[in-house]
Length: 299
Image 1 (cartoon, rainbow, N blue to C red):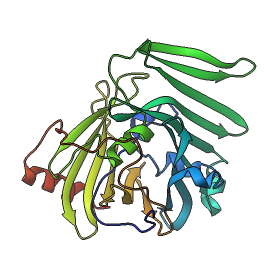
Image 2 (cartoon, one colour; image 1 turned 30 degrees about the vertical axis):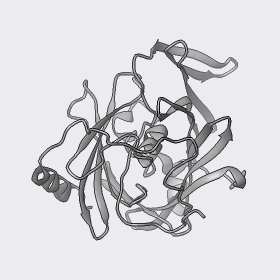
Image 3 (cartoon, helix red, strand yellow; image 1 turned 60 degrees about the horizontal axis):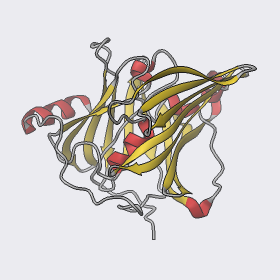
Image 4 (tube, helix red, strand yellow; image 1 turned 90 degrees about the horizontal axis):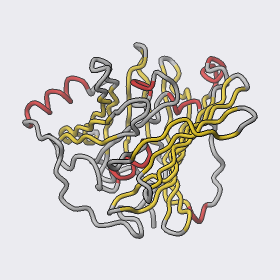
């Protein structure tokens, strides 16, 4: 039976946004960019593996939005992850009825979940935007297809897939399954992201265990804009589920809290390899990591 109760201990990963300002936005994961998303109906319940539900608080609005992160079986060894949400009250009015959705289809490849098709979709003021990243592992190619009115999806960009890269959702679930990311306090891991419009990576750091859970920090590394590092913080549990997540956007702190009716996936999925010892990219001293997380993690 799947557990519907948050636990205490684990970690977090973040992702990309839609606009040119993705240097910071892509780190928000389920806090801001995702707070405009329409809630998806709870369909295909037999295939539902996980359903994480969050309440977002912004300034004086303790229930500014609700966000869901779901994982479903698609068949033939494939999984589909999606983030959706719905703003409420005044925040919905201020957002201009903006809606966005992130969705990725994944398969098992070389012991990890590899993205096959990753989609970024947005609606605002009656206009629709869609980007679709397609991973062709047989040809070692990664292409971007963008929606154009009257033409449908048109190829905009293509590159050689020299190494495995991850969208935010596939990175998140690989970390949840302990197939990517740091494994203990004091470690730092760098996870390569989709290299468009320029190479980027996510840096994940784990801090010490606390009464509220293990502390974690995620930041974006961009070789062009080295001073522009958005940061997301979290308290994470033994299942590597973010129980509390927060970041600061334009001087405003946005906080996401996991709700008790969330459905948490089992520790291992069918077909998933057993987690092994993964070396972190860097292992800073415990004291340095403790000071960094303690200083920056609390809102």
